[in-house]
Image (cartoon, one colour):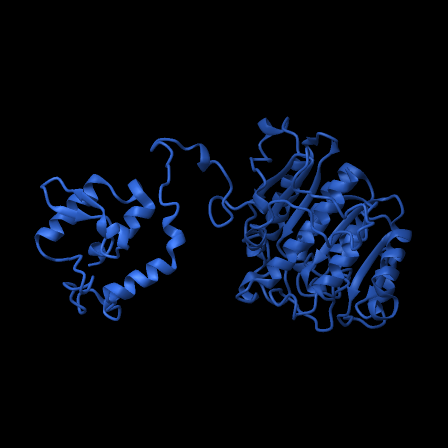
Amino acid sequence: MLRSIVFIICSGAALASVIQDPIGLALKKSFIDEIYGELVDTQDSRTHKAHLLQLNLVTASQNNVFENIEPETHLLFSQLELQYQELLRRLAHNGYLRLRLKVKFPDDDDTLDLDGINMFGGIVTYAGFPTFNCFDKSQFDKNIDIAIVGAPFDTGVSYRPGARFGPDAIRLGARRLKGGVNPARGNSRNSPLAKLDPYRTDLSIIDCGDVPMTPFDNRIALNQLYRGERAIHAHSGKKGATRVITMGGDHTITLMALRAAYEKYGKLAVLHFDSHIDTWNPKVLGGGITDYMSLNHGTFLHYAAEQGYLAKDHCLHLGIRAPYVDNKYDEKHDRECGFDLFTARDIDSIGTKGIVDKVKSVVGNMPVYISVDIDVLDPSHAPGTGTMEVGGWTTRELLTILDSLDGLHVVGADVVEVSPPFDSNSEITSLAATAVIDSILGLMVYDI
C-alpha cells in the first residue's frame, strides 16, 4: 500500500503551497512534487491524491504527518513516527535541495539524449566500442583497424572448465573503460605511451561479438573460429591491415588465431605469457588417450610450430612455473619448437626491465603475437581460471612488462583461460583480463 506515501512528506514551504484538485479539495504539494515537478506531479496523480484525502486515508496534519497510516498496513513507516517540528528541522538541514527545485524536461517524444552509452546497461561491448557483423561478406568493405572478438570455447581443457563464459565476463569488466589518459600507462612520464588514450582516436576499433562455436565437436568449433578470424582479416583498416584481439575461451583457441594471423602477416614472434609451456607433444599430453584429444590447451604451440606459424628462435614463454610432464623430454622439445623462457621467479633476480630488454632483443622487428593465459598471474590475482599454479606474477608486474613493449609491431593477441564460475564475487580475474587487453590495445594503437 505504498501508493499513499508519495506526497505526505512535506517541507514547510510545500505545506504552504496549495493546489486545487479536479473536485475542489485543497491539496498540498509534497516535497517530492516540488523537486521532481511534472515528472511525478501529474493530473492523474493529483486526482489520486484527492481521492485518498476524500476517503481520509492520508493527512497532512501538523501533529503527525503519518497520523492516519496504520503501521501494520504501511510497514515502511511503522518506525518513522516523526513529529512535524523534527521533520521541518531535517528538511531545513537539507535546505539546499530547495534552492533549485525547478527542472525542465525534454518533450515526451524527444530521444536525442538516449543515444549515449550507459556503463550499467544496454548491449555490452568491450569498452562500449561499436559493433557490427564482421563475418558478413557484405560488410567486408567496412574498415576495422583493431577488432576485438570472443571465442567461447572450453572443451580443450584438462582440468576446470568455464572459459567459454570468459568473453562475456571480460566485456562486463570493461564497462567503465570509456577513455581518458591512464597516468600509469607506459610506466613513466617519459614513455611514449604516457599520454596515449586508445579509446579516443580516429581508428576504427570494433567489437565483433563472438564467433559461434559448437560445444559438441572440437574440430567443427575450431574450424568455425578459423573462418571467423579469417573473415575479420578480410577487412582492412584505415591505416593498414586489421589487427585482432581474441578473448577466450581456453588456450586451444590460440592455434586458429595464430593461423589466421600467419596467413596475413607471415611467421610470428610469439610472446606467450603462461604458467605452463603449452608445447607438450600430443603423445605426452592428451594424444596418448585419443587422437581426438591430441589438440588441447597444452599442445597447441606444438602444432603451431609444426605448421610453421612461428618465427623460430624469436618466441618466448614468460612466467613459467608449472612442472613438466616428461622431465627428460619437455624442455628439449620446447626449444625444438623455437622457444626460450623466463620462469616466474626470474623477475625476482632481473626485474621487469631485465625481462623487457630480453624480449625486445629476441623479437626484433618481427610481427608480434601476444598470448596471455590469465594463469600467468598468481591465484591471489586471478582465481577464476582453469589450471592455477601458485607463485605467479602480480597484475601490476604483468602490466608493467606489457606497457614497456612500446615499439614492438604487435599484430595480434589473445587473453584466455578466464573462467568466471571460479572467479571471486568482485570479478578480479575478468578485471585483470580487461586490464591486459587495455595494455595490448595501447601497444597496437601506438604502433599504428
